Image (tube, rainbow, N blue to C red):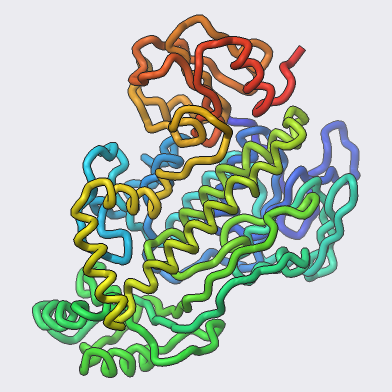
Length: 500
């Protein structure tokens, strides 16, 4: 059962009043700045634990640029854990897993769960709308056209000032407001890295030449230049990616004439492009926030890390931040979090972002037209014939290889548990409420005083070659064993003191 939504008021009013008729507005538990996929997903995760959430979004309307984004395996798994995947699938197009790393064309390695072994291409406005609708259904209040211009934190919470002079109060503030994050800048957190050196244009438009001519020209160019394509994206519509000759002001959208000029430079023809659906530009800047948390203010998604879209990891990385942070921040607010639990958000997620930036740097080099980079690309293409190499690189891109450092133990400790079969169906169907789960094949263990936070499934038939595992709400394995005392220690570590 989902928590009942709290009563919301119009966007021009403050937080809803407390029960009992007290006219004074109650502070929110969490204010999230930014209603993109990361912000909306974090808000929904918090509401699963009955946390009062306000989302402030500076844009008055959802995005209209219909660019395609890809949901990778781990993100698909997380959506399945919350019962969202069936809702999302009809709006996307599935493509078999593989050819992710630097666009090197290799089929998916063996051993992937066929239920999630694909890339789901979906238009960004659609996935943002679906995630926002999910959050609102759970009781999140979203206020659009509200820009944050300042905030101040103290021992009890954060006071947030909006552009129109209104102030709202919360116990915590999370910046999910993108690479140019206002929250990060106001917080004074450094954002070191490499500035953009190159730029590419991307968009969707119609073309004026035959598909056969396009395919032949693109194939010839891509023998030496991978960062270029014209791909069918609908009836008569093509997705276009073309490198630009120099750097431009990224706050200004490109024009159709910009695309025509760059296409003629590289391909010798502009393919008669016309009637654009959307146009954008992106650079290859890579930056990582020095800290994901300062006191009661946290960062997630692009506010904490930016990189080029090579490998399609950006949106996925942000959504996965939200799943890691949501239950931990909720635990702090609900009063049962162990003292250090919130610190594990940065400790776990920042190294993941570092790895994504590194693999993106490597992919960027492999897309270079320089002879040395092309030689390395040919060598890696050969190495990816080995299933172990192919799998390792796919696990990097899709995040199914992430292992948090939870101490010594079996290799599965700290990793995500796949969607194994259990007697009730599939494992992920038991995780919709965002709680922990003890999967117990021994039928001798108990969650005792943690039953208000952790579910217990005693199932000797579960498809697991281990006696029992304790899963965190984000699906990562926090404990493996069969000893009740050892289990109790780990329940305390992750879920606080037992209820009395």
